[in-house]
Length: 604
Image (tube, rainbow, N blue to C red; front, side, top):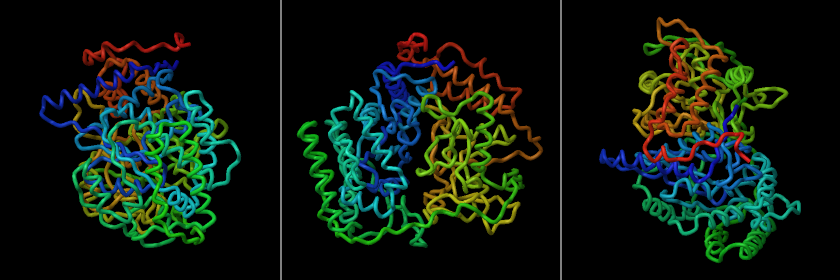
């Protein structure tokens, strides 16, 4: 039975207490604790990747973790059609643990950067979770956003008609009904609907940010006045050298996410009529906002949405980027090959293999989604890069043509579970670093615009394919554990969407065990002379269910709770005794004062 936990203020007390404990421990060691930098966009396509790339060498970057890692059925999700207030939300045991580790793991050093450009009604919750975080607001005029959407065909590619419907449904909920006039149900055309969403995003963000200090970086300033934009960032983080320009080799590849292209002017790919429609709808939306929001809020949003006059119109037909290859002529079997003192699997784990494991877990009674919090895989729609999907009739299945592409969006728990299932393990950071010293990177720096199949065309069958490139990989080790931080695990390498300099490849960065992204997958190794004996899905599912039950004791330190699942997934089957490790709470005094979890039968 899933035990539900009521997300009232005591959950924020828990999180604040854990952060305070982290800060106190660091102070005793005379180490600074840095709150994460929150980078919030008024909409998508505001040039946020530029900022992430600029700060990559000095910060650990998290790309849209709140919007991407919570399923639409999660009551706090940015994609929920019925977003809830934090005072009356119920979370499962995994949901509360994800929330606590999500927040606490973002406190450094080094500085973490949490980028969210599409939060809408989830903005207030995220801001409340990080009350001491510095904030950078990124904006782009509606004309520029409309041009970017037109250029890439993003309204249809990203199913923005569904996004409009979801947000309109959210405005029908009592807690958000005042925003309903900004999204009338009148079957708007694409440009009108998009502009309404841009205005709504800016006004909701301006309202949620209230009196908190923040800096504002406009996309237009970043292009036309880069020194001004860089100076603004220097107020929040130390100055840093930008990454070298990307090696864009083919103008037809999908460069949707690449914002480091050289630009010296602003061009809107719209004709005069379309531009005027966007501008009229912007004025109309801001006029409506004046009737439902404070003057200061509307004035702030208006400033963020200005700068249309900086664009030159050019009604050029949008180009159609060539998608990444979805097939390869070579079909290689997975095998283990000697390299750098270990037996390395020659191929990254594929979508087809990972979906097969998920189906076995499903048959063993272990589900992936727990009230919108994901355990093994963050499920995304195909249009947003999701390749593994679930429905009741087909079970777990893969988007056609992507069966032999590397699995990503996997959590560390999912990666470690697959390794145990396959009778292998995840490599340590030093192992994969040493094995890749002389390896030339492949498929990095947005050269293709997505991952490619796991077989490299010019490599022999017994080579280790994509040892650097295509995706980064989860490691079996991470930063040293301490008494208060969630357990984290290293990532290694370069991905299709990251730079491939040796410094960047070998730079140590880590994520908490339930984190995931579109650029991190699974590499397996085996130790020489050790018999390969995979664990059954049934035994792994049993251990993971035991861990989920252990998570209900919120008095325990986060590293203790995380350590239970690490031990369960990395020890041999005969050595795992997770239940025996769950004992009385040993947390700080303030944790012991929290309200007890509310049992499902006690909830109204």
